[in-house]
Structures are given as C-alpha cells and as structure tokens.
Amino acid sequence: MGEAQAKNGTLELAIKNANEGMTIAKENKIFSVLNTSYLTLSNLQEADDNYQLANTYLRAHLKLSDSLLKARRLLVSLEKRNAFLVAKQINHQKQSTADLEDETGSNTLNQLTTILSVLLITILSLLTLSLYKNNNIRLKSNNLLHKKNSELIISKEKAELASKTKANFLSTVTHELRTPLYAINGLTNILLDEDHKPEQTKHLKSLKFSGDYLLTFINNILQINKIEASKSIIEKEVFNLEKKIANIISSLNNSAAGNNTKIHLEFDKNLPHNYNSDQLKISQILINLIGNSIKFTKDGDIWVRVQKITNNNKLYNLRFEVQDNGIGISKEKQEHMFESFSQGSIQINRKYGGTGLGLSIVSGLIDVLKGKIYLKSELGRGSLFFFELQLEFTDEVIEKEEISCFKDINEDALSEIKILIVEDNKINQMITQKILTKMKLKSEVVENGEDAVEKVKSTKYDIVLMDIHMPGISGLVATKIIRTFNKELPIFALTAVAIGDKMEEFDEAGFTDIISKPFKKEDFEKKLFDALNLKKLLNL
Image (cartoon, rainbow, N blue to C red; front, side):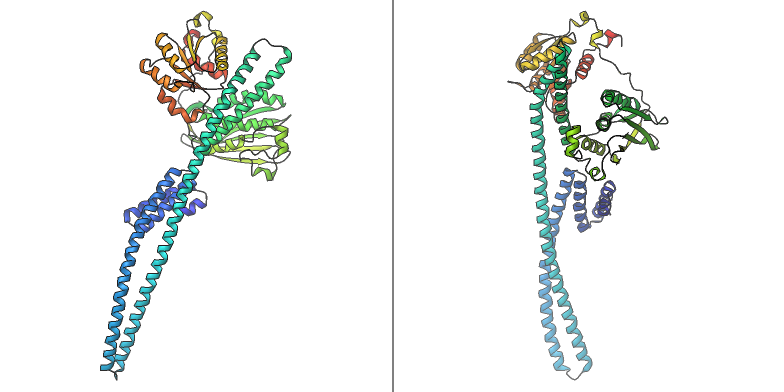
C-alpha cells in the first residue's frame, strides 16, 4: 500500500502505512515481510529527501537479509540431508518392491500397490529436487540484491560527500566575495551621502546597483544550496500578515513606478490578521513573485491577493495570488519556469536581466512550508502565480514596532558610548568607523583578537563589533575568552561567512547577535540601537 501511495504522490500517507506494516511484521515475527518493510521505508524516506533515516532502514534491511540468508543456507543443508534420506528410502522401497514382486508375482492387487508406491516415491523425489533448485535461485537473487544494496549505500555516501564539498566550496567562495563587496557597497553609500559632484551621482548609483545585484546573486545561490541540502527550517513567529504584505508592496513601489506600473493589494476582509508562521520565508516568496511581475510589466498593473480557502479552528488554508498584465509566458516555457537559472529564453535574459533563480527559490521555500504553487499564463496577456499555505491564527498581541533613530537623539547623550571595532582589513575599518560616525557614535579599532581581549579587560565598552577571520586568534576564540570574565558585554559577529551554517558555532562562542557583511545600514542601526537600550532617550 505504501509503495502504491508513493507512486500516486501521497508520500506522507505512504510512509505512515509502510511504518504500520513494519510494526505488524515485528509484532508477529514475520521476518520476510519485515525485511521488505525496511527496504520499502528506505526508498520512501529517500524520496522524501530524508537520507539519514533512509540509510538507517537500508542498513536494517541488509542486516536482516544476512540473517535470513544464513537461515536459508542452513535450510539447504537440511534439504540435502533429507534428499539423501529420501534416496536411501527409494532404494529400500525398490528392494522391498522387488521382494514383494517375487513373493506375490501373480497377485494383481499387490502389483498395483507396488506401482503406486513407486509413483509416490518418485513424486516425493521430484518435489525435493524442485525445492532444492528453488532455494538455489533464491540464494542467487538475495546475493544479487545484497550487492545492489551495497552499491546503493556507496552511491549515497558519494552523493553526501559531493553535497558537503559543494556546500564548503560555496561557503568559502561567498566569504571571499562578500569581503570586497562590503568595501564596494560601503564606500559607495559613503560617497552618495557626502558631497560629490552632480555628474558623479549617476555613476555612484550605477556602482551601488551593481554591488546590490551581485550581493543578491550570492544570497540567492546560498538560499538554493540551503534548500537543496534540506537545511532550511521553519522558524515561526507572530506577525500581522496584511501589514507585512503592505510593507513589502511599499518597499517595491519605487521599482514599479519606474515601469509606470501600479501594485494593488486585495486582502480578504473576513480573514484574521495575526498568524504564527515563518514570516521571513513568506516575505521572500512574495518579494520574488512581485519583483518578477514588476520586471516583466510596463505601463500596467499588478494585483496581490490573499483569500481564505478553508479553516479548521485556528488553522487557515490561504491562497496567495500575484497577477500582472505583463508580457506573459508561453506554454512550452512554463514547464521549466521553476528550475534554477531558467528565464524562458536568452532574449528575455538580455532584455530584462536577472539571474533566473527567483522562481526556483520560491518553489523551494513553498516546499519547505508544505505548500503548493501554480502558474497560469498566456503570452502577451500576463501571468498569474498562486500558492496555497496553511497558517496558524493567533490572538496573541503583537508588540508595537520600535523605530531606531539615532539622528533624533542628542549628540551629548551619545558622547559617553564607546564601541570597539575588531577588524584586520584597513578598508573595512575605515568604512565601519565612517558609518558609526554618521550615527554620532565614537569608536576605537584593534586589528586582532589578542588586542581585543586586552582592550576589553582594561576599558569599559558598550559594544564590540568582532570580525571572525583575523591573524592570530579568531573572533570566535577571542569572544570565548572575553566571556570568561565578561558575560554581559554585547558582542556582535561582524562577518562575511554564510550565517546559516555557523549559527550554532556563533551561539556557543557567546555572541550577542550576528551582522552579516555587507549589511543594510537600517538593519545595522536597529541592532545597535536595541543593544544600547536607547529607547528611554526617545521616551519609547
């Protein structure tokens, strides 16, 4: 039943029924069925991308196969002995028959009995021989299956090694790319904020766009790699869905205005607003879909809709729609739209740009959220992307959002604040100090972890911005040392590494939070604002 349901696409139900079959086989000690259950569950878990559990069941299958194989070999030995005994019995019967024929040669009834006895013995002999050959065939089949399963284990191990190697390679490459990008984006923002010649504005904005584009591309590759490696998990938090979508639309309105396109929000009035779900992933999905519509819609409209399908108590099945009246997608191109680096055609890529990763990320994130996405489009008449998600309603009160705003705080109130920058790259030192200066904050710089530890011992700082990769001891080691004598000091990991893969390591080291380079100025400012507890200065 599990195998049949898996072929019909109901993988979750298939795994449930296969597990039930395994339990019944265990309880009744039907080892041949139990062995089949292990193999079936291994295949189902592999289809569900749960390779660790698939490997566990496969090993259980191989172990039980070996035990059954030994039992069958013992059975074959017994059968050989039985065949010998049967053959001996045949000879004995033949001798008895001959003696009987001599004694009762004229007795027809005895002759018939003799013939029937010989026939019976012959049939028994043929059955024994057939059983022996059948067991030989089974033994060969089991050996073949054992060999195939061993090859499967080796293939899985090779695939896991290749995946790990790819992840390490991407982590290293993105770190090396993010470090100079921090300098490029940081210097560009500084130059745009400072006095510059009017004719330079266009060039600086082009530089900023290129830096942001490259950063988006790097983040997209990391996101896809994370989804493929099944490392993307659901992180629930309470949020206002209508407000979240309105904020997303507000942030994309400038891009839409550049194409003379308007974005409209239609939120079902009968829907509650607050839900407990992964708002970050939902935001990423909508940003990619709306951004895609903006790119391919000029002088048109985009509609973002949220509707209720069904609800069961607090669980709401919602339908999200992003519709535009842009260029549309041809039927033959629609089948590949959710694949990585797919944009329909080379001409579209040249005309509209983009990486071709957005829809692949959308599809992956919706899979993580256990939803489904659909596409309806007609060339020249626009596109409709819609997906369904199950969200949990909550009546929990959402705290009022706090706005960090250093510019509204008197400079004298900030003059006593001391920030230590631990960074070995001269350009990055200068950029970070410039950003802090614009926020009216004073800072000092040290170039390695050893000096950072000594500085924190001798001077009272309000915040430490700690780089991770430095000569001498790393930022991780330096933070661990600081935590042995100072547990309260806010220490931020200012790093270019891929955060998702190192989160546990950062937590163990004792970091207060992580700021990924290159960072958005608004995010950086808010984290410092909260860490310094400046709300009281604004009476918030």
